Image (cartoon, rainbow, N blue to C red; front, side):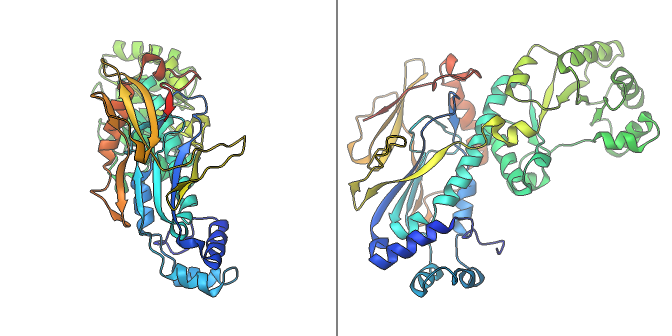
Length: 424
């Protein structure tokens, strides 16, 4: 696949539906597709993420000559000609990136002809399901960490391209930095990194490894002290770098107990300002368990890039309207609600969110002084409806949204959604 085209980031059945619709004349019927999650996998909220990446991908959703040649084996000439001129010319509305969502929230709505909208299903869900799952996990970890910074370092635990997207979503969800340089360059995320155990093992003495790192990077660095004996590693780190060392990192063992011992030792060595960074299979629950310990920052890898055990947000892309008439799937196991919808969030007098209200677009309820409409226009006639979403704004939006949840809604334990969803 040519690197600039995203058109083949799809499933073949999107194209077979298109070919069939072109054959019977239904491809031009005006349709509305909605993206929503039926549930939250026992989480209490979800963080909507990925629209920044999705808009970039949609701008490159064009079928190249090579792709059309490949498609000759499965599609008729009329469909190939249609794809050769494909441009999405419809409308897209969505919750702002970084907004919280709940079961049934219409987080993204795509309006246009059946032909142009059906092609986008796989790409839309691929981006939003991945990024929202990672951002939700990151937000839960940020809640557990409080004011202590989190570093995303999971690039070695996922696909190389997914690692870049995961770093973006983790930063959006509340992480402070990433170890992934591609994400830093592409999205302006702060990057950080020091050394692995291999660097200590490379040298005959741990002191030589520390001295080399300090010589290259100065004392504003973090020394990994658990390659051999941790107390000796801490002593050596301070002997080499002095009390002006930025931090030590512990990557294994009983992190709470080791952090307490390290803090006591550092203070005794006259290095009270040296931070303690911990890493090693952390997730939101182990981070919460370390809340009372003298830990200054966390490095998180595997758990955040795989959504901390929930690797997909479970969002679906469903047809809800055809030529202005509601349509709905009636399967008992997978019920959907027909009609193009919008949503608002209601807040109590203290600013606490109390309800998500989903309503048909043409039947918007009266807005109270504490109600806030949620969807915003992203594309109109295929063109941007405004400036591209800001990652910084999205990051701030997550933090602000979490602050409005009821106290129970921020708990890490499995439970019901933080606020109920009402369908009008």
